Image (cartoon, rainbow, N blue to C red; front, side):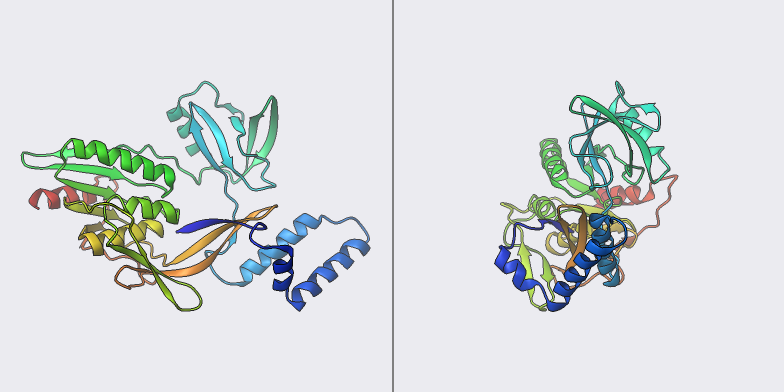
Length: 342
């Protein structure tokens, strides 16, 4: 779970200067002296980034560090860059038209997804269309983002209609999609619902709360946050109603962060049944911060379930443990079998 934060607009010049310790001011003076007197010109921007990266590393927190991701969307058969780090080469709104010599123009979304899955290098040669120019550059866009096709389903027998919704990254797009698909499934008069969070590694705090509010009314606590002052703050749903049908949630080792909050809130407040394997166990929340030159993230709080449990050590233990069989989705079969008897 994370929130997005921009550096620079939050402080006046007076407030910012008051935050600078003697040690920080000394570092700035030393750096300025080095810059002016080193025997050759130095890359100030790069050195400051490396220095700050070392500071983040010294905090010894696996969830704190410089962000090195490129985010993009497939729109009308085109790959459009959503966001990228400075130094990566890509800019927001760039259209990627070729990767490693393979043209992506006039291809379907499925063909583009398949091509992206084949990328194996950390850095790839891209041709991009930027306004009226075509540029060739090296980019970190790569295979770490496997773009899924989210397809809702209905599993039916003589007495039951079980809806099925897979989750991926928790963001506003997923919230809009879940809201729309939930309405469609309920118009089909489903009697129960399966939420598949096995490939959901987390996402945004606002989106996670909005998704939970589709299922729980505003009387329900969702989770608790604890910052370094030790005070816990309880976050509530803003929903208008609580659904009535049984829910099963599928989880596994990739289920983490915001996905774990969704799982525990629906388990403790709704009575949803959890099936699968233990989740990842990410009991901390981060801020995604953006400065002028790079992006970074750092941990700002621990989170607890609505009942006050911390799952950071061992993850969520399912109510019904089912080891995944990759040749046959026995976890999904177990969910369908369970709901058929409910």
